[in-house]
Image: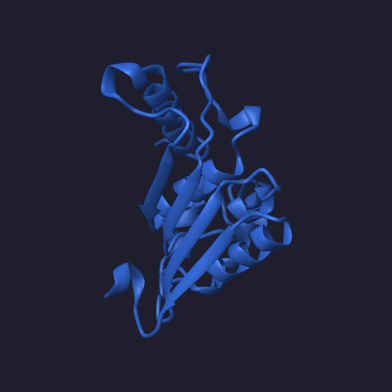
Length: 168
């Protein structure tokens, strides 16, 4: 029902809510990190690379920043243009969320991929991924960490040999 970028705007609103309520909940607004696995990993990565991109901000608590200081991603996708054929369910899931497949909605696939938003301003990132993941191939994390390092961003990758999606 809610296609991209709705979930991104929701997560950014959550970070801004934390900052807006930092004093009430004894939160250090200058030290906010995010983590997530699979689709949640994608959202965490997206937060880490799009802190200054107005089109993804939404309008809740607009007086506060949605920037995060660090990201820990567990097996999240970074490039939806390369997910088809490498994932057991990409062909069913991605067209629902992005309004079409690569032939009909390629620009949305690029726009929704954290890999294409990496800049030197990205949050420091740790990606953790299993080498036998059939839902999100581990090269997704490899590409992201490589691009972040090339941009001068502190990033690291921990590959878990033989682990599948969810480390099963």
